[in-house]
Every structure is written in C-alpha cells, then in structure tokens.
Image (tube, rainbow, N blue to C red):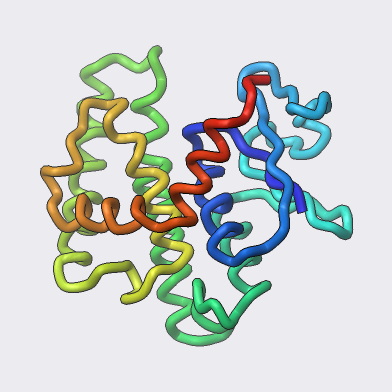
Length: 203
C-alpha cells in the first residue's frame, strides 16, 4: 500500500493507524500547493479531489476520505480491535464519533485556516468550535478514549486537535481533551509517524 500524505494535515491519522496495525506501506509526500508527489506524479491523477489522504491499495484501487480509510485499515487486522466489528451497535457509535470529528472539528477548523475570512467571521466559527470541544471534554471526563479503549477515532481526534495552536487556541482550557491528546501523543505509533513525516524531504 501507499499512503499519500502532507505534513500537518489529517493524513497523519491513517499514518498512525497503519503503524498501530503493523501493516506494510510506503509513505509518499504530496505538495498541497503544486499537487506534485515525491515520486514525480500529479497527485490529481491519483486522487482527483486533489487533497490528502489517499491510500493506494495493492490491487490498484485508491481509497480517499479519512474516516473511510481508517475503517478500512482497522478491518484488515480486526484482532487489534481499533474498530468494533462491522454490523455491531458499537460500530455505529464509532461512525457517529468519526462523523462528528469530521464535520464539527475537522470541518470547523477549516475556515480558521483561511486568511481571506475576516476576523469577525472567524470569531463566529471559533465560538461554534468551542461548543464542540466542550462536548468532547465532557465525554472524556470519565474515560481515557472515545470508545473506552484506543481506536481509530482517537487517532483522528488527536490529529485535528494538533491544529489548534495555529489559531491561538489552548487545549488546556479543556482538561479532559488535553489529557486525551497527551495519552495519544505518547503512543509509539504516533511518535514514529510524526518522526517519519518530519524526516521526508519537501516536494
């Protein structure tokens, strides 16, 4: 498999999961501006959507969208229990969490990256994001991970929360969330993924 990634983006979460599962893969860096890959391709030929992550499977299929990639990977090694079994109620709850992270946290951060959006408008988006963080903080008060044990939703949540310092948002204002991020950050798979991405050359 090949994972197409860009540093400091949501593609970190499938990278973490690949390492958690011990699956063989090749890491291919993408320039988000030029859309060129480290191996000289036009990334849009791989993923016409033009953004990471994209996972090229050994059969030639390309899978995109983080929550779909994460679930696919977890199902390749079900004994690691990074996702509940397909068809179970717990799997439905996982999908609920993944959709919340995708739309409300990941999507909620997107306008804050846009330099063309006025600060007054960004303040509205920030206020909404804070409410979503409040919810997650309450959810994690009495449990270490979103579904009780570490799983793919935790890798995704950790990844998007690493963006908050870009917006001068201090995660310490949500103590349970901050503790969750510290737990995930200490995992060997996370340390290895971050180090591997940092070691790649710019495209």
